[in-house]
Image 1 (tube, rainbow, N blue to C red):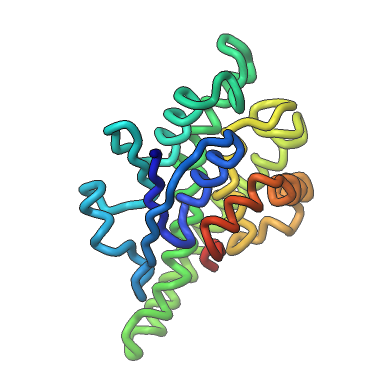
Image 2 (image 1 turned 135 degrees about the horizontal axis):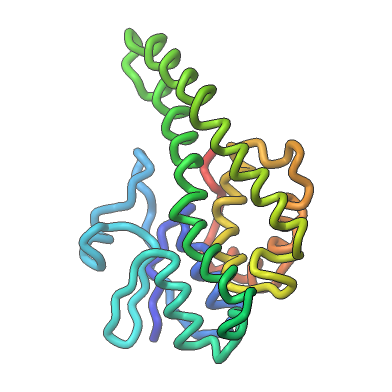
Length: 221
């Protein structure tokens, strides 16, 4: 049976959601983050990088959210959750599937990093680290993040979903950046279409089933 190696509060929640949308049977092997928020070393026994998500299926071990989504849709989708070949929607689907991790998550990860740095710095260095972090956030990270959020808002003004008027696996892939932006990027300020997108995905029965099976899920603030 297909196995999802599931790390709490991680991108692997998207994989559970996709499997629920497709109705594919699977089992979950659970891993808990360490106090420093890193994945436990046991995940390295599954994949050398020790990251999540990872799935095992029919002798294959597959990592990276985009690769996992492509594999699951191709193997079990039977044409579902992906636009037809050689259409503008298919091109948009491919773009958003790769953009989510290749571009969107970079400023969000920097936002998290520079927000946490002052809290974890030694007491004597904390004022200096806070000054440097605030400067980086103000001049670099926050403007980039706003540019991305404005971009999402504009694209969701063209169609209800990211690849077009039909819900696809690209929307599942894009859910994590938007949830992270809501948690720590100020998405709710001036981005009503992006917020409406989150409301729509959170209302999907398969999303609720994935939460029930995956356990508590909150993108870090």
